[in-house]
Image 1 (tube, helix red, strand yellow):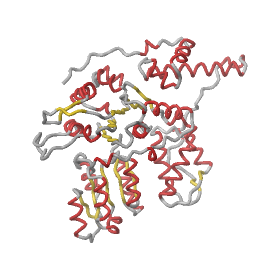
Image 2 (cartoon, rainbow, N blue to C red):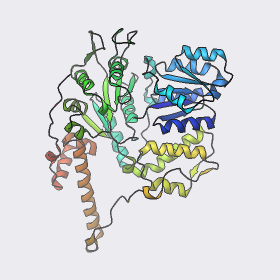
Image 3 (cartoon, rainbow, N blue to C red):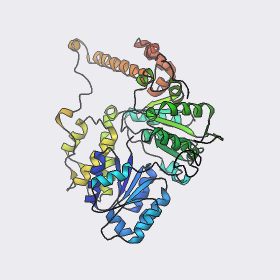
Amino acid sequence: MLQKVLLIENDRIETETIRALLEKQDYEVITAYSANEAKQRLRDKIFHFVIFGAKIVAETGQNLFSLLHQEIPEVAGLVITGFQSQPEVLVTARQCGYDTLKSPFSAFHLLEIIRHAGPAREASPDRFSRSKESDAPELLGNSPVIRRLRETLFAVAQTDVTTLLRGETGTGKELAARFIHSKSSRVGKRLVAINCSALTESLLESELFGHEKGAFTGAHKQKLGKFEYAGQGTLFLDEIGEMSPHLQAKMLRVIDDREFERVGGNRTLKVDCRIISASNIDFPKALKEGRFREDLYHRLNVISIELPSLRQHMDDIPLLSSHFLSRYAAKYSKNISAFSQEAMRQLNDYPWPGNVRELENAIERSVILASGNILEHLPIPAGEHKRPPLFPPAPEDSEHLTLKEMQKKVLAHYEKSYLEKLLQTHNGHISHTALAAGIDRKTFYRKIDEHHINPAQYKKKRPPQLKRG
């Protein structure tokens, strides 16, 4: 998961300049043009850094960032000031723990401040307590793939089972975790998210488990970790596949014994949160290479849910595109109501390697640049990136078959391929594969018998385990 930066500024040109700069450095930038919009963004996502632009600071003074600091005291921030900034703005910014940068500024200085921002500070428990049934995140789509996904996530939400979300970048793993939490008995409790790839091993250990005063240089006071923040809620561990062997061993104990100690402490604390993890790594390969503990993998992977790529539900593109168009037309006060035929052709032809996130970003940029009532063109590659046809040409002997025979042959081919792919994803586990396919075990057994599929060949051999640390 990319580090998320919330950029609050009502100067459109400055906003796009900063956004372009940060996106080139692989940050995910979410924009807001007012305090109310910023609050809405904070309800929707967890941010790693917040930037207050010079124009909105000049108009609102210290009120804006002072107010938002109460909402997100754990998030590092930067206040950009104009040439003649009020002294009280600088004083309040420092009291909030925010860096300041005078405009005009260099790209180097802006990036250095963000890169050297410390790990998230202690969070207010209320920051993570906003999940309510009425605020449940939407999983848009009417395709069979998305309908099955919603049904699966809802079924999983009714239990406390440890869940592993897998899928390509941009498929919505954090959204799926939020959906599970919102439909579970823990709704109204905290949903705490952390990116396991964004911090060094020592910082991640402190963020997860907390530390005692004096545990290490710079530990000037006791700090609660994410397991304690989550309480009786849900802890979402994104990019867990990047976790070090040392922390994998500690995670194993947390899951097995439901207890841990803070760094530098000896008092055992109990864990009562649900754990949802996510990763896009190739786990079978990571297990084989010894980069990930097999015992931990099996405990995380009690239920494995594969988030579909956008290529697997292209028929949802019109609905998703209309949703994003309405959202960003309203956000940027544009009177844009539809896509041109050329834009729709682009939407349907492009393979979307960045999935729904890339689709959303492309439409947002198009709305910003549009001047008329119709969205004429999208800033996406063409030609060599054209999506391949969904089905291959008919086989050579198709002229000897009736249409019904041909349909049966094609369906059988793709049904077998689909079931084999699911079995591979779920390591040959019958119950998990049947659940992912949306069918019962009896029907699943009948299907694999029809296609002469042996589930045992998809079970992975156990590689030597790493020693517990």
